[in-house]
Length: 369
Length: 181
Image 1: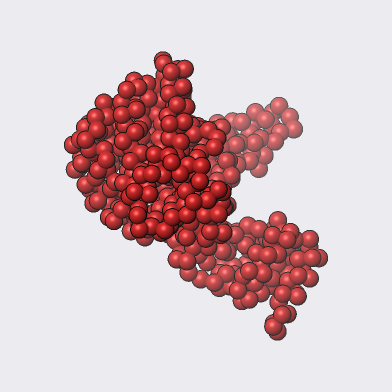
Image 2: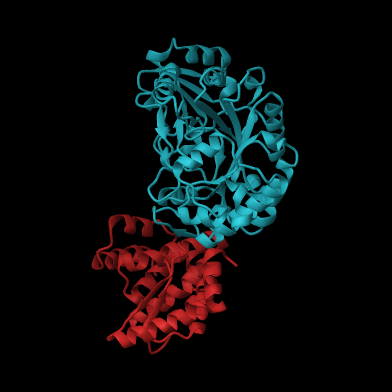
């Protein structure tokens, strides 16, 4: 895939001499540059697609580290933390929740005060030396899509390598792993890819790396000493889902060292009213809207529960046929779904601990059902 | 409807029924064909905004999924038959239309619900026992309600429930609730 390049670079004037701003100016000499006092000027009103072509360097004001939104009451939560060094993503997945969350804030942001974010992480890790935290940068942005421009991973991987109770996850749909290959993660960084059924990847994930490209990148980072992770999220119940997801599982997991897979998550599409409206407003019809989505207790629409359980069970079976010890978990699901899929409902803390330790949550499932 | 006629008719109807500004704007943004078809349905069933909401959302979802216009969706055979039902009151007709449209919107879910209803009938429980499933089957808990006016009636109903719980039919109900067929 071709690495993303912005059509314009906007730099907050007060951050003009930051390392990030200097680096980007040097790497993007031909890209039109604007220095502004207020980066709100960079936001193209109501044009999400145009926003995704603009790169804004600014200071992040507020907290970098947040709890993952899966910590909603009534859902089992894996105690994941998200840290946002960037916001928005150059890819154009039809189902992406950022279309709703960042509807009025569409330009891609790279935050210049990375050191402040690292200090926050350091403070949390030091305050709780007895706990291990999984911390990901892929919530509001693709973790590696801008890395060829920002080199952010070259700060993050060594930072986490020195911290025994922090586990970094870089989550991506890109192939931007070059920066990682000569670093020693010391088991403290997991590089993960979002995956979907073949048809969904082909029609709903515009601009992202193909399955083969993602797999190739995953093999490269595994060879460089990283553990890898995979997220089937959002799983979309569409016609042909069984073949579509099974093919991807077979193609990916037969060609990797599954002992070096840190985790695999399964998460059904969650649809807010705002996201639904955004998807309907897209120029091309989306398969995402074809599913039987029904409202859940948290106000989000999902495939109805019996169907979700069926899909999770099938996918878990296919994964376990390849490696019975594959650490699989489901994302943003109530205890009832966990117990139907895994034969047990672990506590939030147990899920977190098992994922950190790379112990399979699913190992008791086959007999429990 | 003549040019401008639809907008005026729509504004009059929504004003009379106190629709929100958001709903009116959404309606006005529809193609004239779709807006008119929806207005026809809303008038026919004298629908307030809350009553129309599900029908409207489902019709749009089906339209997106099946690449049809909303007008075409509202004219699909099952919906048309429900709208033409004779000798039924307005509330029952609304229920029929809603059921028909819901079945088109959620074919697998509706099939599962219908199968569950059939299995409950097979349990042959007395009328004093009601079996209820979670809305949209989002959950696997079944509520069994017994209405009794004496200890003896309660004991008799409970015996029937106990007997029903031991049947394969009852197991089939829970299997179906657990995983889609």
